[in-house]
View 1 (cartoon, rainbow, N blue to C red):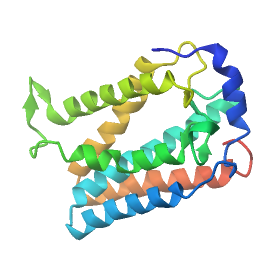
View 2: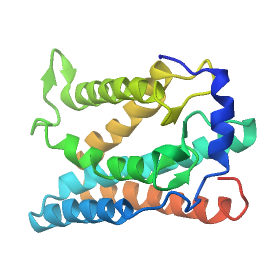
View 3: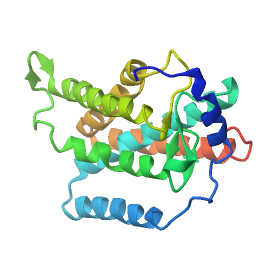
View 4: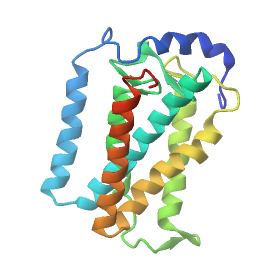
Length: 212
């Protein structure tokens, strides 16, 4: 299943009413949160600030995309991607469940550990940061094809699917994770804090308005 299907609009409509509903809430929410805290605490203990930067860079980009996806859903009727209420303990925004958000909280950190040390090194004539970003994006897009073939993840628009998400979403995610840690510390902090603050402001404004 490479692209969306308008027939899934009924399932997407059902998901809209479940955003931030506690009907499916369970204690895995706390367990997953503890997992993320442990991962970051371990990296802080080891003073592995590059990995922390990679994780937070991807996570702030992830949240910006999820907010924009929810805005698109309100403006056009359907989000580009939607999570089903049956598949999660809690839907944060229309396109992201608690479990997915937890995964993205550590995805950049984990994947940064396989990067070569030299940020200017090349593989097959391509800068290793860019190459690893594209490869990781392709892997995540392939996983998303599988997810979209299950009731857990919904693509409604026939023009949206694995190829658009690969180019417009996952490549920027991993470019942030792999390029930001190579910046000077002040620029790393500026990127993460600036985008994180923007995400918080958008959520604080748009949630009460019922837009996301």
